[in-house]
Length: 428
Ligand code: ZN
Ligand code: ZN
Image 1: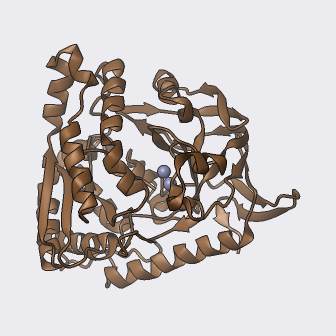
Image 2: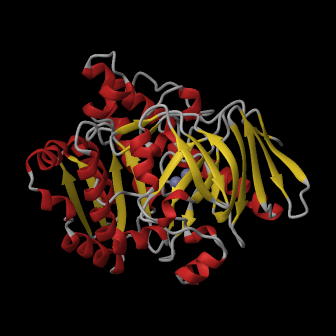
């Protein structure tokens, strides 16, 4: 699962009919985001974040939210040129700062029952040429200041969702050989296809897809595996699962009683690994875009749950800095399973955005665990969660370890194995 940053820094997919205009598809995306993704309730407030490049979608969502009965929609826009100006011209002390007053206000909105929608679409390489020390310091300051608000999200206190808009800067990175207008059109097409918008009835299609993901999670919950064993080229990894771990997939019921689907698209079922019970080595199967840097061919070894060796053919310095963020940054907070036939995998695109790329392949995340993936986890304090094996960190970074050549077994406590995936596809 992808969680909204502080402020933005298929089998059923068919070709849209010629009559379906771009405006209609944008409206369908907005409607699905508000009514299925967010599950907005009449009278509820909405806090939205978006880049200035995503204004057309933000306006459609605002309209759909008011039509659905929103009492107030408040949108915070960010501008990537302004972000760059900070890294180039701000004094050193800037990079210890974050707008805590604003984040506290957002936390107060959540406490008051507001829903949260993030429009993703940032330039994945925006900060690639900026001083990595400044980027890391600014990120830590931001993470700390945003934490009180983020807890409403990670604990699912409120209904929230993330959808994407094709922005010119992002589209240029995904389709570097196309003129900008073609690149943006292609990226929108890919977003509409993988977000299940180009179907006759996107709302009922989403409900069926959601039910399938929930069924898969329920099956895994019945099996109560102790460990997952991934095998493939460059990978032989045993991921112990947290005590009382809970598999989740598709939508969730937030503690305010509202059903939401936090990520659009979503193809994963996921749970909480045990922070001390990960052994072996694993190689990434897709590049990771982290803070504007592409990290490629990650190869790490885990012992006793922690990374003891970390290499990458590109971006290794950024990888090392990432896992040194804090004590929990070198341990796992999530393991997720995605079949190789997911619409995103079949698109063949590297979106350079976790919301999409994490739904293309099975993955693991370094850092913070989701307390909702532990039975009764929302009623436990952090010491109780840690005792069950849930990891704690300021970061949560997903990277892909699945492909068409990965086999996966579920291991019971006594060591007996059950095949779960063969060549990247579900067994049964
Ligand atoms: Zn994740
Ligand atoms: Zn995930």
